[in-house]
Length: 333
Image (cartoon, rainbow, N blue to C red; front, side, top):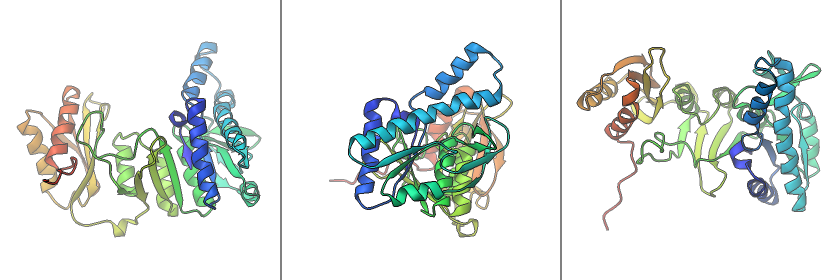
């Protein structure tokens, strides 16, 4: 189970998240929780460093930023213990996460989960600091979204085959629901499609974590930290098993998608390049709405076009309707 910063923004949310972990433990399951820094703590630490020096040494910056997750794990473990549930907090290095590469953007090279397994065997909830690992004698961080990567990598190393990502949204939607009111939550996506969405600008999960899940067969469940409802299951389907039929699953808008100061609209799904009607519908729909567009990328999983930034949101809404991605119509009484 992974809880992001918005899910831990205040003591009440930390307590609520701890109760969800305890409920899983009481169902007889072994529970590992990966925790981000609470609230906006990472940004606050970065701002503090900027006030000291605009060019902070990256090794020292990692020393500073890694403390945010350490605050998170200790508070989470305290909340569990206060509810008479066994728990222990571990930093990334204590959990056996080894990383390599430059500070502030390291990569995980191996996990030695012996300490985690010992604590699980004692019936404890193991609370691990995301976003960090041991780099030789130092600590190094994994870059933005690094807690997602920690969680999926631990799920693989422990052989669980499943990782739950708790966040402030109910799942992955057919488009940004803040822009498209008719966007609906998707019950299921492939890792390949989710990777394309992430690359197209959808800020739901870190792309590297999706790659790990796909490669190691970890199903990822993106769900709400505040509502007890199913989210979106991202399944590690092999490329050869992807549907051949054309299917548009979701749309993404990236307002900084190209260097030409254009907005990029991407349709993500399967079999897109094999079926010319998908691209034709994109261009014809935008033309009917008086929006100039040019194709920028095509593949079996993604079609992208560039439009003027001022037309980005209108283009997203028009295409969402044209591809029939809106909420299912209500049945007649």
